[in-house]
Image (cartoon, rainbow, N blue to C red):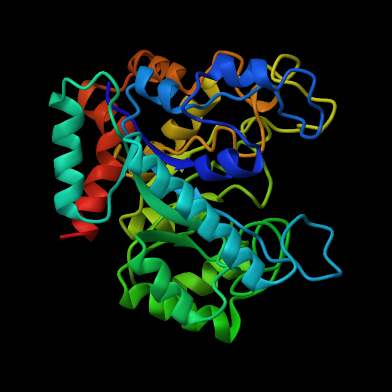
Length: 355
């Protein structure tokens, strides 16, 4: 089955982890044996070849660079200008992958339909993976003129915040509103018809955003608070608000977001019994709240600064997403529902926004 993954940090992996994503997953793991600088070394799950093996022909691919003040304990760049420069390096990687025939950028309805036809009918042994460019956290937008430049370079979705307090909004594990700068950013996002990604907004920033923003909105990688009671997840009230706005929510595969009481450094997918079943539970919960299957999809966040040590037991590489359709069938979903969840909801969303 064709799969749309609404959140992959591909360029971050290529540049900050120094992974050549043209290699196989096994080759990348082998190259990282003995490395200890990051906890997920040798445990990656994503490569372009694995995406092709899993028929994941389209994704939302990120730029990400957090600006942090001197007093912050979060990792990041010490000026917005440095953060912007980092995102431009990531953009250069995507452009290079296009130049060598590995990927193709999707920025409008015509390109989307053309790519879907290409992926279905091409005889190329190495299919080009399509990507929609998204910015995770807006701190690298030095001022609104930079947002316009990003749009011209193909940016089509943006999340105002990531972890902690940001320039434009407050994110995960922080609390605060969007303020004057945030309101100006939201206004320009709407004027450009960019997709607002609600993922990572803290509760206060989320609800303030809902009051003043009236443009297209999705949540690329966000699970349900009913299963894991943490501000990183959405409450039922937030999910219902997004449903009312015709949003689609992508379910993520970071283990701590899938089971309660995860303790970093102690918990493992094995001792916490983390499997793709928790993904199915999150999908089903959103469908029950909506009364249909129109508002949920896949947004794995695989290799988003974690690997096999924090991924479902029954997923070795991203290609194992092909297990999900049968699991949905066993849960009682029909063929039309499964198509919607695996790709069609996000595709229909883009076709509507780009009409």
